[in-house]
Picture 1: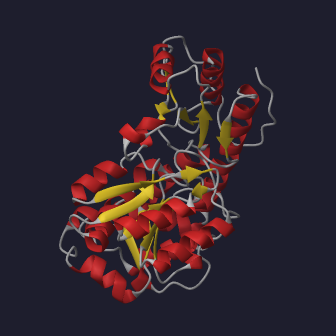
Picture 2: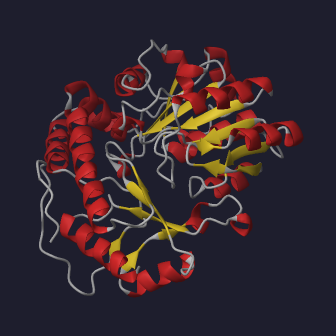
Length: 379
């Protein structure tokens, strides 16, 4: 067993059995013990409120003022400048937020530029919004600037979707200098930036978001699925201005598919204002660091990108392996991972031979360690 110092509040159940599936394919945060205790206590408190039944009748487009005040507290580590309520939206998760933005900012038939390897469902969201995607080449610092500029010159995208902080799936953090270059190119060609930062809450010391460098052209999206809980389905959106926000929300105000669940926001608001959310976030971050250190120890010597406090690792495979064959081989040993094709906006053009290992998803450390050793032996 690999020995790593332990200072967190996570259980360590027994080693998984030979037939148990070890799922490294989903990027779900680990579950600290404080989470269950807090959820039980909060639901008990809510059950004692006589008017709690009325809460389910009050789903509001963009969230209530109370919802947005809680959002402001949560976002402060990454966006410390004052944000007026009119520039904030509370939505039913990141996907609903992106659909809103795609439909309003890009429009049917419009072109979205995005990292060639990106959010796994981006292509499906684009299809539903009836927009096209242009994949952008990546290097070890994120979007390659000359390729982005060439795409802007020749194809005129309306917006750029990007994930610069602990990029999904490559785990890179775009440097401050590169962020400024990307912003300069976007400005030059009048490209709106859609910045998705689900892991920013776990990396408050990362370079400042694009939304701080260029707040007038950037829409900032921060879901709570990584730093708090996967199932609460809440995402916060910060727009450039009240006028821009009205353009996005205007025609969708009566379409409730993107409205946040009032029960979920009630729980989240309580946790954020009481400090419970911050405790959960810190526990998740500490556990993520422990699991990343374990991965570095077990997979030492292999070409792997990792960010301490992140939820996944990006493992480049030797040429003798085919990513999809390797993933199938692991699945035969009950270990699930995702190959780079799952993140390619154009799988036919994907030439990255790699897999993403979501270290956060298994419920116990023993599962993580056992699965990592199976990956190491397969290599």
